[in-house]
Image (cartoon, rainbow, N blue to C red; front, side):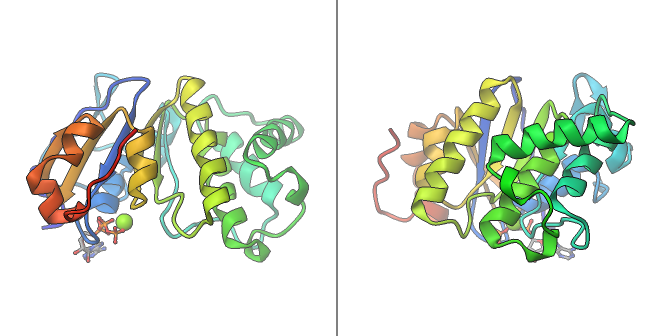
Length: 229
Ligand SMILES: Nc1ncnc2c1ncn2[C@@H]1O[C@H](COP(=O)(O)OP(=O)(O)OP(=O)(O)O)[C@@H](O)[C@H]1O
Ligand SMILES: [Mg+2]
């Protein structure tokens, strides 16, 4: 069982870090929250509405967006087209193409991709593909944004730029759940952290509490001490 009786709350406006070893069930949990997989048991509630049976596109329109760990752009479309589609089919969607493109461009400026608008998505480098993935999710005007290893594979300066970006997204009022293996980043950004191991929740709390939790050290962090702030 990939996700086994995991129960968690996300508070509006917070950054919740979701960590755990490879295969712990983090991405599967995102797939359940976004409706890609149906849960065999349990409920998913968003803004007091039971969305357990809602289709992925319906959840997107309610304000839940995600990035994929293995990025999933439309490869043959341009960067601008990819993001415009997000703007045209998400929450508060815009059906006028020019207007959707204008707003898509604003988002691309924010993520640092404004100079790549005409490139085909498949030709982008990894760091740019990751930014496109984020831009596409932001274009759907989410209230809740799920980030699945957005920082993986980036170099240190790209990581710190992306961390600032994540912080600025949160400052616009978007609630974030971030899955990340970069311990320093996830502990630095998160208000609270939930730890999964083998499909189960083994810890939850403020970064400093979780970092000192023996079960978490044993299952994931190792004995090295992590400075969290
Ligand atoms: N579609 C699937 N069919 C069968 N098993 C799957 C499927 N997707 C994931 N799994 C399995 O479920 C478990 C949880 O996988 P998941 O991808 O959620 O882990 P994760 O915590 O995101 O790991 P990582 O840090 O490596 O991304 C793993 O054992 C994985 O092999
Ligand atoms: Mg994963």
